[in-house]
Amino acid sequence: MKLHDLAHQLALTVEGDGQTDVHRLASLNTAQAGDLTFVVSAKYINALRNTKASAVLIPEALVADAPCAAIVCASPYAAYAQCSWILHPDSTPAPGISTSASVHKEATVHPTACIGDFAVVAAHAVIKEHAVIGANGYVGEHARVGAHTRLMPSVVLADHCEIGEHGRVQSGAVIGSEGFGFAPSSEGWQAIHQVGRVKIGNRVHVGANTTIDRGALDDTDIADGVILDNQIQIAHNVKIGENTAIAGCVGIAGSTVIGRNCQIGGACNIVGHIAIADGVVLNAASTITQSIVESGRYGSAMPLLPVSKWRRTYAAISRIDELVKRVRKLERS
Image (cartoon, rainbow, N blue to C red; front, side, top):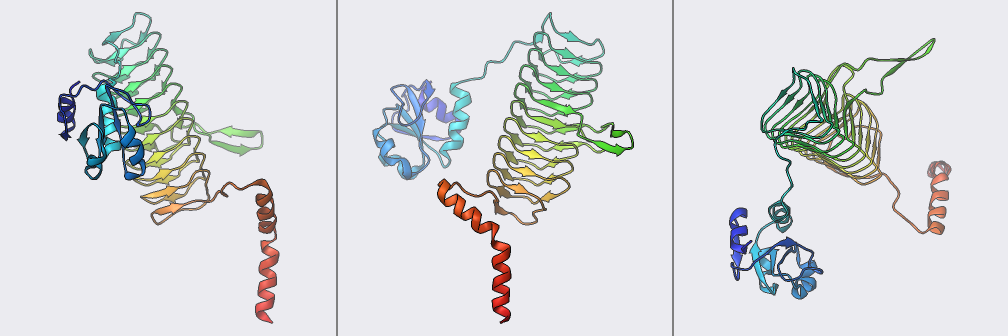
């Protein structure tokens, strides 16, 4: 692709030879002729000056340091994200229903949709235009898949659950599993029938092996633009606001409400029945046991230390209660 053609698709301008050919993306250090790379700040200026790429996505302030043609952009990382789809387009299966798929006669499948090998589409399910249901996938009764949404192989979208348009769900994800609801009784644990749904908005990404439980009574609700990494557990009745990003291995207990534009680091544990305000950033491995009412960055995990120092620190922490009592006694005296 000619660089000026790529820049036109991005609505950006070229500095240098717009006839330069670019074929793929590569990092600054590994790029060769025909590659397009990107740089986000002056922190990488030495790598920029030595790159062998044919072209670079670059902020205007660094154009003079580029040894090659450039596309000038305010946000090179965002432009790189767009280019990743243009130069490396997704392979989309042809429309149609595989002969090995099982589609109920009362399901509605748009002619432009694709139903993969051995997939199952149950009664009254609705598959909208250009949606893709991957091999071995399952779409339950009265479930709904929006236009241009792709469920990778072996995804489960359970009964009555729905996902909006332009979504992407990675393999092994289960949407609409039974929530972990049990009541103690004289005979042991009595299961509570989970009768809510999972409702997922538009442009939502769900990572591999992530599980989203259906609501007990009200729905579990994932708003537009949310991105979920791999192996996340979202319990019943959780609400997640628009454009929130959640990294891998996070566990969110039931009836938690998470605001818009939050960023939750990997391996965070969030207890149930609390609320997290809009714009909150949680450091990785934090444990959240109470509501957060103001935006900002929060963390609770102890940073990594050499073992010898960690042992001394931990020993000191274990004596804090005793030290506080001694300080109060000294203050009184």
